[in-house]
Length: 99
Image (tube, rainbow, N blue to C red; front, top):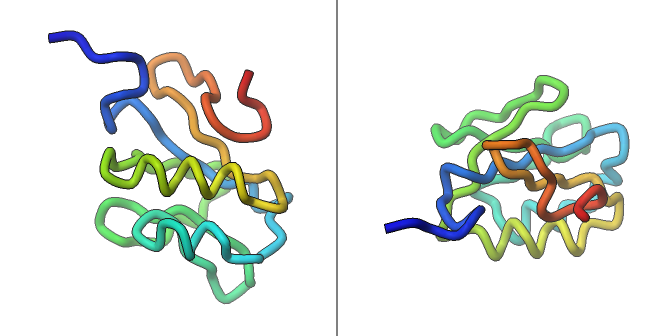
């Protein structure tokens, strides 16, 4: 059975550009399992183990049950700093660079 591109949670990942993050925390409100504000006031993605990933450009898989919340986070982010892309070709599907 073939799935549509991006339908499998393993196929999408999300990352945050902290240089553009405004620290509003909207992402952490929508999807606290995926996003968290750190002590510096900026948002970061979290690993599946709930570990804050602070390396620049760090990505984390988008869990399928949270896909809508992650997409809403990207759409509502005032800093336009949340990027959701396909793992297979790294094409952005949601976020400021999505086509």
